Image (tube, rainbow, N blue to C red; front, top):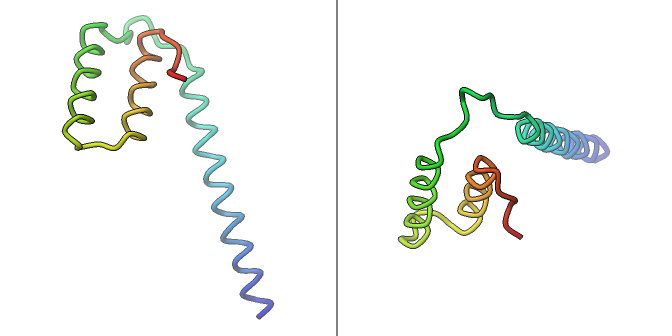
Length: 83
């Protein structure tokens, strides 16, 4: 029985470490400034946002996915994330 408790703790620890690593990569990606030559086109971003809205209205994506992608588009446009 003690072995299974230890194994469970190890699995939980591995999950926490994996989650922390994903969070760190995401934070590093957000902090990295866009290169001047790879600055996104405003028109392209607006088209992506329109398509994202359409996908939400048609039920092809859920609200959580919409919020995440919307914040990424707004960040690329230099706008603050929605609150």
